[in-house]
Length: 327
Image 1: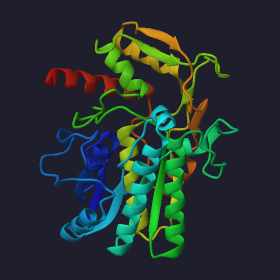
Image 2: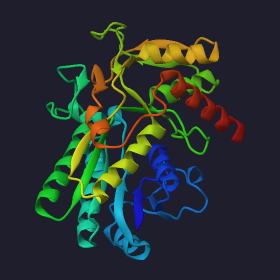
Image 3: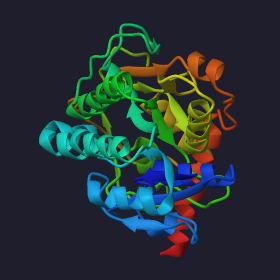
Image 4: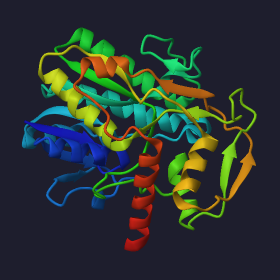
């Protein structure tokens, strides 16, 4: 009973690999290494270098590794890039997902965990988002993920197939044991950028919009520690293996922090000011996104262990310093 983890050499995928392994589960990773890194995986984890949309290759892995479930992380995730190049996101996120789902059906893999996003909500009418609120994404990235959710829903209605789509809010931090963290070149994640600036790797941090209708004038986001998020995937698969129904669930802590609050937390952790400058708003950025995680905590045996912004910041800083020591 092996879990195929697509995109498992990436930031979130590699933490999911660790979580499944820590839970005693066998895994195999498929990643084209366009953004992922082999060094984020334990040495004994098998890595198949390839695209998750390659149906022949995926079918071969399923047969040879006796795969019984798929956790799908592979895809493109940068909102501004999706606005500039929407067809890339249609291909990398939606088309690849369609091929992977079809390959699962053909090879009798009936359980599927999908890496979705809070971007499917757009800017909601209320600050705390519940799963039954309207789905109105404001970017091609969000739409590409929502289209995959729809495909999963339709597939589950037509076949012996169940899934959990986990809608991530802002993922941050790093493995507490230092086994993995954020390595993306030209990162767009706020905390990663702030940690790079704090360690002298960036000369400036841009705040994209300070005129939003929020207390600090900047966007508000719900930051979830990547290790807690990875544990939610383990619980999602356990839910399906125990006969649970298909679900879409929010993954966040239920509290929001503004861009300025996150930067202040990094400054407090380092004791140094950050090089900040104001910039124009980015297209596709919702004003505020905060999860209501009640459904996740009620249905799963999931209790966050790192629900503290200072803990998330410290983990991200430790990882960034660790990367510098390696270079």
